[in-house]
Amino acid sequence: MAKRLIQFRLAHYEEVYSAAVSEDILEYCQCRKTETFDVHTTSQGFEEAKQGLDAWKAAMPAEASSWKVSEGNVASSKFGLASSIAGCIHGDGGAVHPYRFVTGLLSKLLERHPDNFFLSCNNPCTSIDPSSPFSRLYTVHTPKGSVTTPHIIHATNGWVSHLVTPLRKKILPLRGTMSTQRPGHDAQR
Ligand SMILES: Cc1cc2nc3c(=O)[nH]c(=O)nc-3n(C[C@H](O)[C@H](O)[C@H](O)COP(=O)(O)OP(=O)(O)OC[C@H]3O[C@@H](n4cnc5c(N)ncnc54)[C@H](O)[C@@H]3O)c2cc1C
Image: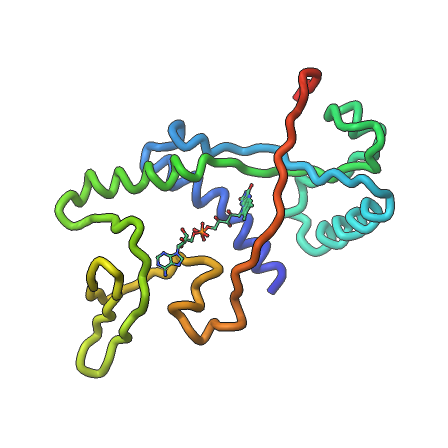
C-alpha cells in the first residue's frame, strides 16, 4: 500500500504536466520540473533520513533513482546552505502555479460550455439528499438554491466528512505550521 501511495503521488507531476500541455496553459501555469531538498540540521535526524532513503531505494529503485545524499560540508558549498547543517537529501521535484492552473482550466471550460458551465462562489454546500430507488439524482443544497445531478465530485479536502458522514473521525481538518524565509542579499540560489 505504501508503494501504491508513493506511485500515486509521483504520478501527479506527469498528469498535471500533460493536462497543462493538452489545454495549452503550460507557460501560463508555469508547471515545471525542479529539484527538491530536505535539509537536516541535526546529525541524528540526518542519519535516520539516510536509513529511510536506503530502505526506499531498496524497495523502489526506479522511483528513488534521482534521490541523493549530500553530506554537510559538500551540501553547504554546493547549494549555498548554512555551514552548520548536518547534510541534505535531494531529488526530483515539481512546481506549478496552482491558481493559474485551476483558473486556466476553468476559463477553457467556460469557453467550451458557455451555456451550462458555471461557478457558484461563496456558496457552501450545506447538505446532499441521496439518490433513491425512485430517482438516480442527488440534490445538492446551498444557501443560493438547490441543484439536482447524477454525479457529485467531492473536493472539500479535510472538511469532506461534513457531507460524507461515514468519513467522520476518519478524515479531520487540522491546522499546520508554515514559515517563509527571506533569502537575504547574498543568496546565490
Ligand atoms: C500552510 C500550507 C502550505 C502548503 N504548501 C504546499 C506546497 O508548498 N506544495 C504543495 O504541493 N502543497 C502544499 N500544501 C498542501 C496543499 O495546499 C493541499 O494539498 C491542496 O491545497 C489540497 O487541495 P484540495 O483542492 O484537495 O483542497 P483545498 O485546497 O483545501 O480545497 C478545499 C475547498 O473546499 C471548500 N469547501 C469545504 N467545505 C465545503 C462545502 N461544504 N461547500 C463548498 N465548499 C467547501 C473549502 O472552502 C476549500 O476551498 C500546503 C498546505 C498548507 C496548509
